Length: 270
Ligand code: SF4
Image 1 (cartoon, rainbow, N blue to C red):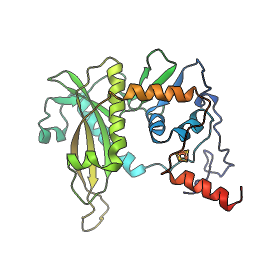
Image 2: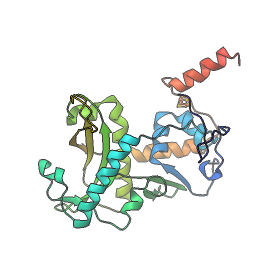
Image 3: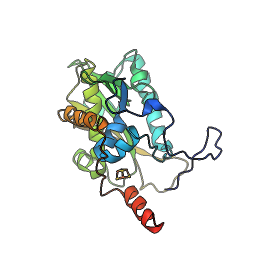
Image 4: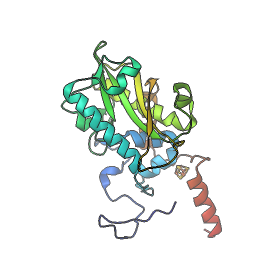
């Protein structure tokens, strides 16, 4: 993908390829606090080399355009859930899933927890200088069990109806489960009782509609997922070891970007 650097006025500017904010770059064995977001942790799991080049060497990977249609379903769902949160009433979808004992969780920090850019759920990892954080889509309260439920909104357009087994086993959804494991882990470490079942709120656009007619119709499905955070701490420790190392790790041989860069070097005779 060709990605051009623009300033806040939309004008083209030279792309530096390197991060300018020193707070985004980790110096091996530093003692100052350093924040690692859920998405950077996911980068670590996907390709240690790219994670290292980004967080330790300060390389800025090309930006990607926003997903405005997906963001819109998130935004509108948030409005709906906030109305129910205010009145402490179950959301309209809950009846279909026998979840009438569930309400959106009311907490002074709920907006901060949903703000992935500036706040999110946040913990200091053990006695390290690493701060783990991640912005959650929503949190509900199971009034019977007095436990919190982690929720992630997902939008897609698939001709087949959503079913739990296929959704959770789909190769492209494995990262979604990591996301849920990570948020549930953070919330637990923040001292909350978290329900063993989290939910993906899946909005599936109807691709079989006869026409567009200025609207897209979505089918909504709650996909329950039994989160598991037992693996997270070992991986975070591995990640911290990597941050403190001076050795560039291996790349991911399936990565098309690296393959492109290597072939380009060959073609350009570098
Ligand atoms: S393999 Fe891909 S993700 Fe890893 S360093 Fe290369 S470009 Fe980055």
